[in-house]
Structures are given as structure tokens and as C-alpha cells.
Picture 1 (cartoon, one colour):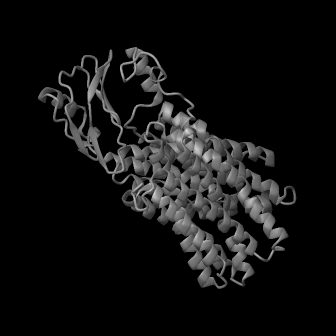
Picture 2: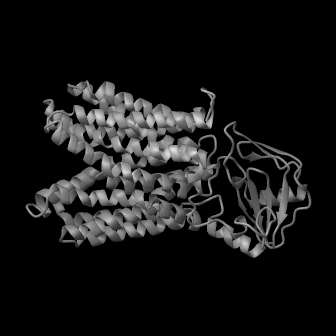
Length: 508
């Protein structure tokens, strides 16, 4: 008999208990699905049979005691692989590492666009392009990353995380090779902007959501470590790019960065392994069996998982989440863009002023890990409310009164910690609201697509305020704008918390 394949959904309730109530199994042509109202286990085999039904199975995390299966059935289940039945198998940390690499390389390069922008303005396109024109290269990449979220997230859920990341790695590498031979700004729009943003979107949502399948108790921590890669990548990619541009020139630099993408991302992509069925696998299994998991032959379940599914928008909590995140992102990048010029305006030397952004990036990476650890214990929605409100306080009570290099450094570290923590919390909150992991990529993609509105208008509005109200020197209006949208986001998130549970100190 061929070795069966098991798919487990490691999601669970907030009380961290899982029980099979009214358990039963459904037999298909090539599969058996053990189902309860919250989760199911699909055992696939050519001739696998189960004779005993579940009476009751209780679990701490997903460490399942299959008490009501016969000894023969239990032995067969064990043969599938103990790692598939454990809550957090060791391979989960391999997955976290692989996803961290993807975040580090792709987002690290996006965060380093300022280095390219300076080189384009002073070398490649000096006197041929304006700051506004050059800025759109990096803006297109970030915008495409977010705006394509519903599509690339669905690709991840339907065709698999490994497929999505490997395709994305090839697209990003190709974009950098083509960019190396670009001689016009519009060509960089297509290559380093649109094409690279598309490839990044394919890898971003896949690598960000996959660790959730491998963890329950430490799911937030695993997610936080993964997405901290963007900040870590910016630390070493920026100086490498800057040095290569100055010594070897633009074309050589782009080809080296392309090679780095290929060498690091392809092996990391091959390490991606999912624990759940993809939408395509589920549809194929249902088609072979001729009925859905519940035994019904009709209905949407019988047709399998949709490629594009926007049903999550019917959930008021999710709508409140995405609107709040759009407000957050409207003000989030303003300190990153303006803290250097703000510091110079207050007589801080240029090297110290440039240090502020680096401190924000490092602190953001640390904040994502810390909040990932914390939200596992207090709940993702609680963590989201706390992190957003704390970020608001740093803007109004630290940046507003930061007039010396010391106070600016304190603000940079505090803002990075709190703002970075928001990213971890928002992703975990979307997972909690979605109620399952099989469509987490598409759900997160929808959230980021809405956030595109905020990321597109946020920084330009800050710049307009500085030019008009602040007369290029007074940053009070910028601070008030950033703090105000963060405060609105905080209020919306507290409403979301109230809608979810009216108990003030409930773990949600």
C-alpha cells in the first residue's frame, strides 16, 4: 500500500484547546476525511480504510490523541509521519528560516531604493530626470506589491507557497537583469518598478503566511521573526549596493544583486513545505470523489475552493481591520522619509541624522519579533490595539518635542519598536478573523490591497504639508498629520475589539 499523505489544519480556538465533537469520517474514492465542526484531517491512500468512528478526541494545541481509532489504524497514521501530527515540528523552524530569507532579500532591496535614487539623480540621469520622476520607480514596486495582493495571495493559496515563491524569485531576478541594460527612466519603470514589484508580491504573501501552518502556541513569534527579515535585509543590502554603485557602476551592481537573488531565493524556495492542501489539490480531490467533505454532492463546497474569494469582506471585523490599517500606513512612512531632514534642520550633523533611519529599521525588526512573542499570550487583536496606540503616542509626545540628537534617537528607537510591532499584529489579526489558514494568503492580500490607498497618498500629503504649511522648515504639520491618522486607526481598532468581544480584558 502506498504511503498516505496527511493534511492538518493547525488552527485552533483562542482558549488553545481543540476537541473533536460529533466526529465522523467521510470516505471518498481515494481519501478519508476525519471531520469535526472546526477542522478535518484528510488521509489519502489507494486502499486505506477506517473502521472505527471518533468518540472524542481532545488536544492540547494539535498534539492529538487518536484514542478512538483502532490500534491498526493508529499505527497506519503514525506511519504517515509523526511530524505531521505534532503541534510544532522541528521542520517548522526550517520554514521560518526559508521565509525569513525571502523577506530579507526582497523587502531589503525595496527598503534600499533610496540608495538607487541618489545614484540615478547624481550619475545615471543627472540633469535628465526630476526627483519626482525617479521616485516613481520605487513607488511602482511598492504599489504593485500591495495592489496585486488579492491575486498573488490567491495564487499562493490555490497553487501552493513553494510554487508562488519560486515563480516570484525568477521574476525578480529577471527584472534586475533587464534593469541592468535599461538606459531610460521609463524602462526602469517597467523593470525595477512594475516587474520587480510583481515578483515581490508573489513571494511576500507566500513567505509571510506559510509559518502560520506550522505553529499554534508560537505562531505570532514565528510570523514576527519571518517579517523582521525586511529590516535586517535593509541593513546589509543598502551599504553593499552603495559601494558597488560607486566602485563598479550601475550595470555590474544590478547583475550582482540579480545573482544574489537567484543564489539565495531558489534554495530557500525549495525548503518551503505546506501542511495543508492547496485549493487546487482540494478541488481535484473533491472532483475525484464526486462529493464534498460533508458528503453532499451539491453546493459551493462540492466545487472546491474558489481561486479569488472576497467573502471575507462580509465580516465587519475584517472591514474595520483593513480600514484601520489603511489609516496606519498613511502616516507610518512619514518618519522614515523625513527624520533625516528634520534632524539636519535642528542642527544635527549629517552622519548622525542618517543614523536615525537605520535605527528605525533595526528597531522595527526587533519590535516585530517582540510583539510576535507577546501576541501569542495576549491575543492578536489586543496586541494590534496596543501597538497602534503606542505608535500614536510616540509621534505626539516624542517626535513633537524631539529637538536634540539624543531625543531624536530615543524617538527613532521607540517609533521603530512600536510601528514594527503593528505589522506583526495586523497579520496575525487577519489570520484570527479569517478563522482558517487555507486562505490566509488571499485574505492578507486583500488587506494589503486596501492599504495601497494609504501608502500611495500618505507620504505625498506629508510632503505637501511641509511645502505649504511648514514652508520647508516647520515639521509640526507633518507630525500632526501622521499622529492624527494613527489616532483614527487606533479608535477604529478599539471598535473592532469591542465588536469581537465586549469583555475588556478578554484574550482575542
